[in-house]
Length: 266
Image 1 (cartoon, rainbow, N blue to C red):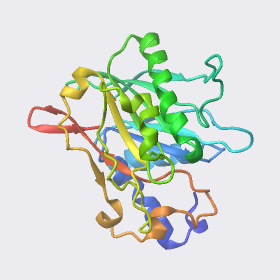
Image 2 (image 1 turned 180 degrees about the vertical axis):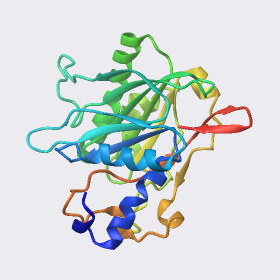
Image 3 (image 1 turned 90 degrees about the vertical axis):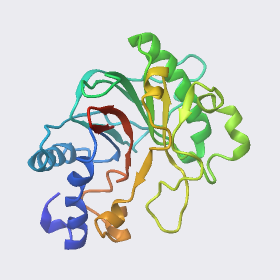
């Protein structure tokens, strides 16, 4: 990601990334298409150069079918206890995911719920209904494997507009079971383009203790385009040739637990 390969406008956008990430204790990055592992070390260096907290990152293998591959990565200032690459080999339903979830068990001593699992997902738009539903099977697998109760599902679900019709929600177990709480609603706009208004990106919670520490309605979309006076070109990154678009730069800030007089964001 050399400066000389980017025009000044896009380089400015790239430099805002550490400011966005440092708003959170944990940040999920998706759609990483850098096959040389340059992006995460570069971002970590920039992030730790400006943050009072020390961040680390954990990244998945390259995931996907055939030649198209992506990675999930978490940047975090808490602790990672375990990671698990979901194998997607459930009998009779193999290869259900375009990009299998990269599951991480976190420990956060600053929050009321100190241990929780995050399951990320980037669905294929045309298969969104099936993949969102299949997250329930991932949940059952991880719950048994780690004997844990507190779960956060997050990512680009493509859960709205043309990809998930209202009549299809009844076929999604993560939605029709009441012990899963969706905190980004169907009317939210999580896209960055001015021409769309869709709730593609979602956060779903499971676990009574975790849910009880959430201030319902506190989840919000951080409009970094307005906050940093960025153009749509800077936000979307589609004009980049080197590196290829490697993430969807959205930050969803969520108040997880009150600790003393301050809030910790996940």
